Image (cartoon, rainbow, N blue to C red):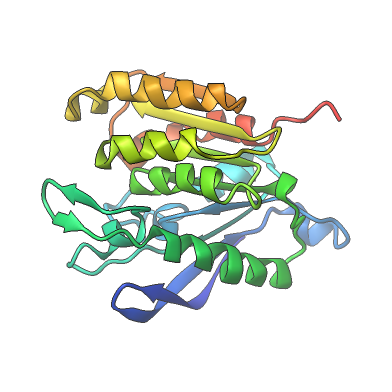
Length: 256
């Protein structure tokens, strides 16, 4: 079941009302004492329903979760739809120059502070979650994928795992690499990271950049699953196909 309600989000232009979404597995209603891990995601409007998705195609997450019986809560908030490139600002952890939008002032810290201090607390209050770090994950694509890398490195005390699909590494490679290099990551941090073979061609030097970033995470002893998706492009239809891969990384059972 997917529920939705209105939340107040700290947009760059001031507080703004947005839709929040939560997916609850079928067993949630059958086992009233059971608690569940939580996956926090970005671009919530694109996750569950084609009717609400920006380009008419969602990730189909509700169907996948129901069909597989995956026992996980998914919580997300819709993105900024303003024509002033608000989404880029909210999902940028740092300033950068966008080839279309021009200079972008990064508000990613404000976004992540809201996620961990407001949204997570609300989800833990409303639902039977396992609120500890071990059972809390984060995921997104494109700029949301970049935010996932930011969350894993700078908010590692909250998230034990992340899935960054087609992350926007091109925005500021030097800062991203330094962010990873200078981070202190807790043991057992796990990360899924991919890039489509087709979209690799969209940005000069992306193959080498992807290699450097994944190598830095390996050096940090992150349990990393990295993939070049065959014929993968920058679309929800492609990201939908990667759901089984990143779910297996996030939910892989520890030996202890």
